[in-house]
Image (cartoon, rainbow, N blue to C red):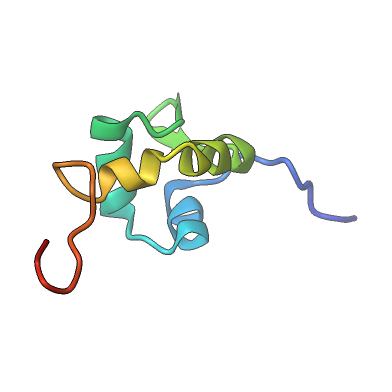
Length: 75
């Protein structure tokens, strides 16, 4: 039987998908409105919702407190 494509992902799975740590995922949920759904004590994610959040700039917003990344010169 083929794996269901539209299944709920865990914190670890969505972190691996995005290439970030679980701590970063929890921080994005708390401070940057990352789309997540609480199921008991677990957080679950739909890949398409997270993709839309990233494309809308949610992850860029989370990169620094000012909302923009610093370049190699510190600017």
